[in-house]
Each structure stands twice: as structure tokens, then as C-alpha cells.
Image 1 (spheres, rainbow, N blue to C red):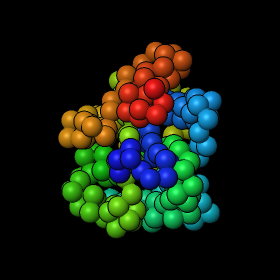
Image 2 (cartoon, rainbow, N blue to C red; image 1 turned 180 degrees about the vertical axis):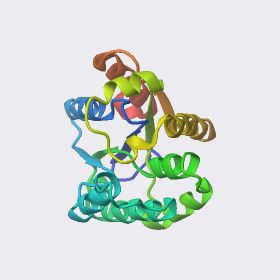
Image 3 (cartoon, rainbow, N blue to C red; image 1 turned 90 degrees about the vertical axis):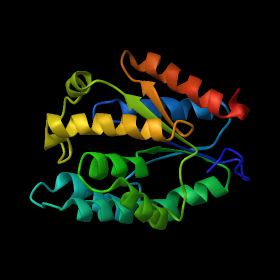
Image 4 (cartoon, rainbow, N blue to C red; image 1 turned 90 degrees about the horizontal axis):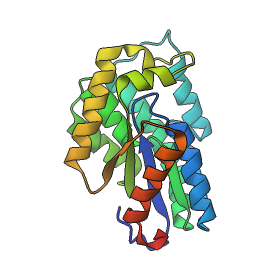
Length: 213
């Protein structure tokens, strides 16, 4: 999607390896957009619907359930289809700005670059699951593995427990996708304090959307 959406709504997603600081930055970005007079809807993928939250539990919390990469990818897509229909499209249709914690790029990187599936196959499935709805801007919080590990001061979910090699492939996958789509996917230096990173994000968003300048 482009920033000429007829209703004025915009769709932004934040991505990055676990420990990049997405939760704090989503809250900061949503608050800043609200101060600009925008209605802001935040969501997480998977989640933010009853079906999505149930699927999220299987994907991330049920350590006794072992999923093949393809099955994992399809569960994410099912949760996302519900999220798009129930939350994201209605918000965009009424002119709101949507800020999502993860979206399709996570599958491309986690199950594709890091998990061994063909990223182009994932893109094709995503086209069906989302009805072609892609973000106007994807902000990838870019942080080194050591810093990310220090920030994960909590019990790890199933994906976070997959080891350093997996996390390295994630890091490299995000960089590869940003190089592939530089107009839509932007790397943001996520080292340093929360306020410093929030300022960098606002700079990217302001440059992308002329109505915020």
C-alpha cells in the first residue's frame, strides 16, 4: 500500500529480533501520533483477537507442542487473517493509523530466512491471508545480538529459545529484506536509550509521511 490511501489511514509495523525493544517503541510511537491528532490503533501479530490470542498460545507458550516450520507459518497466517479482518482493515477504513507489533515480515524472516522455508512461498501465502494488505512502512529495530540478549530479562518463549545460530539468521534475514525493499522497510538503530530510539523512529516516519511534517 502507498501513502495515498483514500481514507487517510496509515499502516505501520515494527519488527526486529527479540530484545530489540519493540514494545516500548510501539507505545512511544502511538503516543506521539496521538499528539499529532491521529486516531491510533495498536495491535500485535499474532494476537489482538480472540482467535489470534488462542493461536498465539499454541505458537509461543505451549512448549510441549512441536510444530513443523510449514505448520507454524500457516498458524501465523490464520491469526493474521483474523487480525486483518477484525482489527486492521476496519481501523484503516475509518482513517485511523494502525501500529502493529510484527506482521508478514516476521514470517518471512523467522520461518523463511531462519527456518528454512522459501521466503517467496511465504509471500504468496501472505497475499491470500491478508487480502494483499501490506504496511505503508515497516520499521525494523536493528540491534546487535548481545544487546538484545541483555534486554530479554524474562522467561523465553519457544522462538526465543532456539539459540544463537537462529538469532544470527534472523538478524541477517532482516537486513536482507531491508535491502530488497528499501522504500518500504527501514532499518532503525535500536541501540541506546528509549528516547534516542524513539527520536530516530519519528524522524523516519516524518520523512515518509508528508502530512506529519
